[in-house]
Structures are given as structure tokens and as C-alpha cells.
Image (cartoon, rainbow, N blue to C red):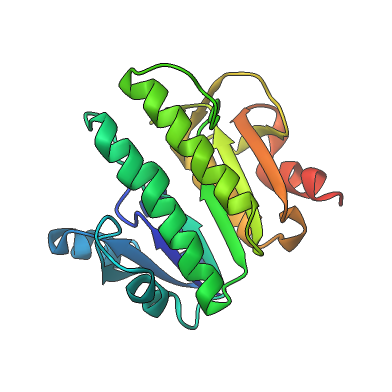
Length: 217
């Protein structure tokens, strides 16, 4: 498959690019800073320069032409203010999904956040973030796409174990970024997970088993 990843220089995205390239897929990562291009190439991905905060839907659609799947893994990141939670975590996610619809790239995976809720209350930056992610998820679910929304728990840089808990509702818990990337790679190769919103934390099931289970296999 050809897979385009928004937020291609993110910590989960770089891990996912390595996994997908190793599996023989053609991977492109959207980045907004040219200086990150070499890191993507080292991960086996083609760097695509595009600022999702300022690009038009037509521009983003051009980068999705010929893709078989799209992954939204972009985020404003820690240290960013409320305004960028809206422009990136909500706005860029909406833009990327609209571009996928325009180009007919039906398989669409969103890396969301546990607790994301369009009705989340509060004015702290984290509250704004949870609301923005929830609004983006709700928007994507309303589109004619084969979407899967993945909501990981507390992200860690611990080495992945390959053992996870993947369900509609898991309760809170940590999950290494390695294992998030492994689950994303498996979801991309499991079309029967379309239409599911899933929570992910560390657990006892091997990644492939966990994904097959939620897919009904």
C-alpha cells in the first residue's frame, strides 16, 4: 500500500514509518519543516512538505493522490497553547479528512486521545485539547470514509512489549509509543476495523491477536 501520514515527524509517526517501510509499504510523511526531511528518509519514508495549518484542502488532496490509506498523527504537541490545539488537533484533522474524501482515499486512521470529547468542559489547555480532539473525531465519523479512531492511554517512551489491551473502552493506563505504532500498522492491514473507535493501553494480548479480536476474526 501507499500510506500518507500527517504529522510525519511525530514520535509515533516516525516509529510507524519504520514499521510500514519494513513491511514493504510505500510511506509518505507530511512535515512542515524541511529540516526534518532527513529523519523521515532514515525511517524509510518520503518527506512531503506541507503546513496543515495554512494549506488548502486542494493542496492537501494533491499529496493524497494515489494513496491507499491515510493516517492523521499530527498534534500541536506539549508546550503549545490553546489556539494551536484548535488549529492543529481539530482544524488540521478536519482538513486532512476532507482531503481524503476529495481524493477517494477511503481508509483513514486517526490517532486521537483517551478522553477526547467534543463536550469536554473547561478552559485549561488540556481541556481545550480534549475538546478539539473530540470535535475532530466526531467530524471524521460523519464522513463517508472507512475510518478507525485510536485513542491511546498515557504515552511513554518505554520499550514496546507487543502486548496490549485494545477495546472500545479499556479504562486509563500507560502505553509505549512503540506499541501504539505497532497497533496502527496492524490496523492499516485490517480493513475490518473500519467504523471502530478503540482505546489502547498495555495489556496481555499480542498486537495481532488484539486487532483480529476487535475486527471480529
